[in-house]
Length: 412
Ligand code: PMP
Image (cartoon, rainbow, N blue to C red):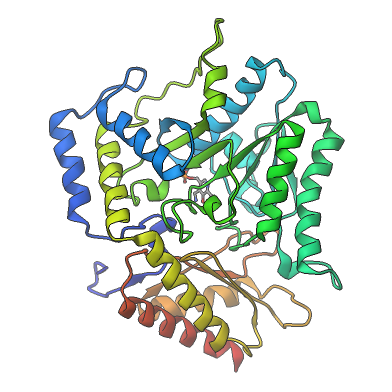
């Protein structure tokens, strides 16, 4: 990308983790333009062909029997998920099931429900009280596990904390568990498959819906089509946005298992989902999303993400093995997190200003990277890297060099 002042940058964050197909894809712009000429708008209280076709394609991408509801942003996709979960339980004779369990450090959006589900204190400051009924448990962050505990035991402990919370709250009052496959903006926290499988077991046994927020992890970022595909778990509800259109136009979706949808087809005044939005599933955005899915498949970008991510992670681990301020290096598909610490033994998070200086040095070298943001909880110390899945080998070499050089002054 070239800035106003003529300087060139490599976007190592794909905007806000969303430009999965990369910039300058004319075929995506053309798909939207063609649709704008054919039919620019029609409400989804009825339907239109691009939305129908996209819902079918998403069903294939999800590899399960899902019904899709379109909206405008990741936050809204999650709000829709919460409303569907509550109403599903109501329709199924469990009207008390209204609460949701989420994790600290997770991010689910900016609106009062999605922000209530978010587990980052800084994002909530000044905006509380938020929607009631959202509870938080610890994230499966093995790097910060108690001393003497194996990573495996810690992962199980974290999953069982969800079960414990459900039981303590009263199983019959809990509607759902919401989680990102990998906590992304909260510091790239990658769970063990054990954790995800245990959470799935708990939800099934306790009658609680598993809502997986694929807003960042979806559409190839994880190295598979969806993040949860890496874990062999099947969610009850999946929320998506960002990479659905590679960020080119706003569009989001909430997919629910067909059995949930069936509960809304029963009779009664309150039987259907009463969530109207004017712009959700805009025809041009849907047409663009369809072209985007084709492009991601044609160029095998999920696989490319897996390959590039594995190399990046391997190289970073080798190059930074003895860097005194690098506490942990984590990755998932083409996404990496480098946790910076004051020293390796105390694991005390490196201060926000020092972390920001690393970002500034990268930018000076022409590379944009990110960091997680919870300064209130003292956790703004993870550098985040998530370039477009279409990045070339040269792009990746440039990214690695600039990143490693920006970390050198810390070690001196
Ligand atoms: N969920 C996750 C995991 C996200 O990262 C985000 C946005 N960063 C959202 C939901 C909210 O999406 P939006 O900003 O489109 O509302």
